[in-house]
Image (tube, rainbow, N blue to C red; front, side):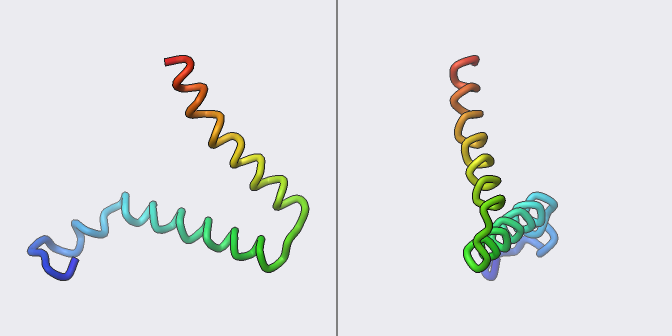
Length: 63
């Protein structure tokens, strides 16, 4: 971003803002999980991980 002729608004488009928001939310969640381990949070994160891993496999099998 420093050595470019494009305006800053092009670099900070809606996609970048959404991606940074998701990354910050996920980082905060993992930080909170490491500092204060709770069983419900462990199960919730494990469930989300399994879903995220299974969906692409199902997509490959169907499509």
